[in-house]
Length: 205
Ligand code: GAR
Image: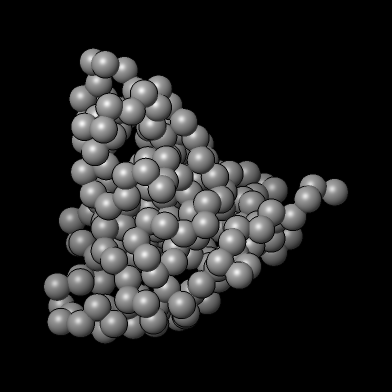
């Protein structure tokens, strides 16, 4: 079975990267992670990649004055590794429109809220401040508008009155680790595609 070659983009801890790596160990998983790119050389997730024997590349955004130049360096690394799909997992940079259009339909992200609620940063605090009783996480195709791409998978978790941003984040993270591999599996197997700005799911045979 030929597997789709995937790169994971990270900026930090790398727990979602780890969940994807574990999923890729299954013999019938349709994707393999061949490259991990971080914009920070101190990202803990780089060690996760090394431990799994996956190639790593650090591309520090601070070395580039223009967003497009930083994205061009990422694009070069992805092409050099013959990557077909990109999963962003806690990658805390916003891409240029050029990069997003170039990788359209092949660029996924996980976000720790039930989008379209609470895009951006300080997501768990936003949810607590809004007083929602349910939050969760979303895997979506990336489009140029931040955190607003077509949705591939979501999971909900209850919000308790005693929650802090930290306790809520921990509860949501468990679900992130479950749905990101599921979403990657669907996209890598060609069962969901981005078409005319929508996530189109193929009916199961
Ligand atoms: C995750 O909770 C992910 O959803 C979030 O960063 C965390 C990264 O954790 N991403 C965003 O907020 C993107 N807007 P990880 O490095 O352990 O996977």
